[in-house]
Length: 336
Image 1 (cartoon, helix red, strand yellow):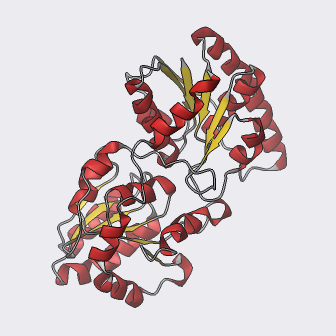
Image 2: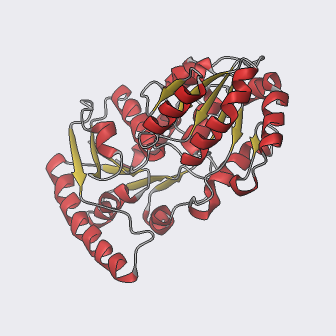
């Protein structure tokens, strides 16, 4: 039995899902330990492949006052002892953390219980928790470090890949929670795109869904608008270009789908990691990056219509690798 932990955001939970699918293929039983906050429940509350699921009262320590940080740390320690009991109940032999505040209790619990801890860092710049726990882990997996690990991407993004040559549809992606800036940008660009017969697919997130729906109706423009989809690979398959944030999971899913992209990194991401995620591709001339505060819409439109879709799509093949989760589990098996 192994425990998978971490979450809060779709990027972390994507990795958990890939590890779960890989474990099932290898006949490894899994439990999940996450948070009752964030998106953890939305993703896994009804997931029957886990032998057990625990959603704890963990919350983020970032952006809290000193006093609240101390309180939060003591609460994490309390939950860590609770995780230690959970591990004993299920005879857990290893803990795989994908980061995020959801991972803190089980990760510290693994150290307290002397159970092998394995960490996956999804971004180009390590998060605070992963940086803190790295010395205590048996292995630290990252697609951005010298000791390379293929980024875990669901097989369905590879299965629905196709080469792009002509711009007919654009997908706007703000991440699993949506992004107000991307949403407003899509609405500003919509009349020009409509005029040029470019169809729009738009992931807007739950909070802005009604606003976007009304705005497109007022513009008299038909779009494929959705807040969240478990079949994002099918939405991507339809598109010829993505305008997107640059979370690592989204970036590698776009690579797997061979979908050319223009990235507008979230400017408040820790250590500006979204910019550096995208720079990984820009350094190979395989994407364009626009900085949010300096965004020039005329230059953005020029890029949209002048991007060499065929070249980028052909050369994205191989930038994401199949079986990243298999690689992690196989590398860790000697320890449990």
